[in-house]
Length: 218
Image (cartoon, rainbow, N blue to C red; front, side):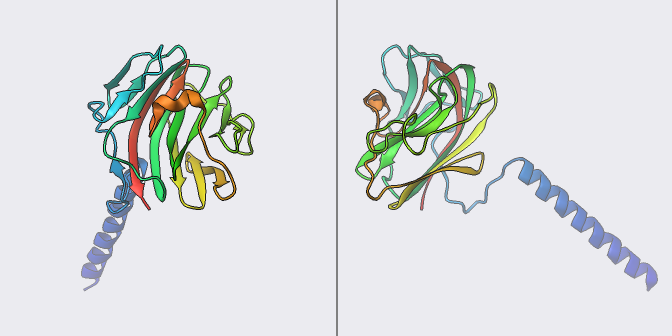
């Protein structure tokens, strides 16, 4: 009887250990819950519904190794969504972005906000500025969302943007960096980002890479 109890305890301990190893492995891989509602916008193989943005002076755009690569432009290179119509409020978009080379923004993400649009700038104005362009006519270097951060070359950054009727919120590596109220504020884009409409991602005099682009409705 004692041997049976010992065996049961041993099996139970082994099961707990195995479950812990599996859980840690999935966590390390960044596995998301199946019911999270995220819809992929890039299959990692071909540009698909992403088209070069046609700023003029664009660098090459290509899909390779599970990434969209934006070669250095003069000054912009970008991709613009040409697929099914996207929501304009109560949604989230997420992606990973990396600056490969250069010293300016590696992700200027333009997205719908109600009947207007806005851009999240990461690493602009010489490489460090973060902010929304534009709020009440002021761009990311001037308005209340403006902040500064050193970005590492060759490092992937997790980016998430949430648009609701109340606010625009953004996260960088799971840390909330912006919460901008929509009520009483004029949201718009700079005219030089028009080629990104209605949804696009661009770099400025910088080689960049993008992956894991996805969207979910709230």
